[in-house]
Amino acid sequence: MNNTGIVILAAGASSRFGTPKQLTQFNGKTFLQHVIDEAKDAGVEPIVVVTGANADEVSSSIADSNVDLIFNKNWAKGMASGIVAGVHAIRQLDNRIDKIIIAVCDQPFVSAMLFKQLDKVQQETGKSIVASAYANTIGTPVLFSRKYFEQLLGLEGDTGAKKLLKDYREDVATVDFPEGDVDVDTQEDLERLPE
Image (cartoon, rainbow, N blue to C red; front, side):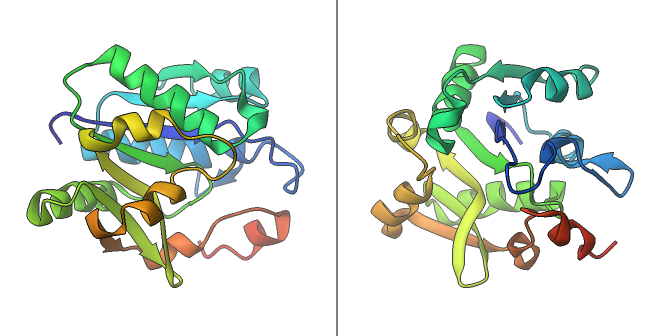
């Protein structure tokens, strides 16, 4: 996937979950390691992981993953600050990047195929935003073309990138990702996950 980077948001405190969700084991690897591995399999580069709460633990868990780690000192202000930190980092690492995928680490069924599909649909439709569609909504992972990098850098608060999906609806294409509805916020959610 030429000139496509990814920002993996791994800064949350997992307050409802009770332990760092990023480090939760599922099918033999942590949630975070799973997303990193799938991004690598898709050929996405650079891979930027944004940490915040539990940064030392999270960072040491992926020390051998050959990704770029960014500590977001403003992580407590919400998801937008992590997106801003990640997009800024990717642009510093490689100014030829044309597309950035924003992903979270608590969707255990993201795959390399999904990342490739986001890119493919962007090329086919010419739309500048390609979001994942699930449970009557659209959301992460979501791909943004360069056209929206400045808007991503201007995000604030806990709205994340959803605001851009609403504001620029006419420029959004979607990829079906029914498993995207499965995210893990509590220990009970984890116990209900299919293997």
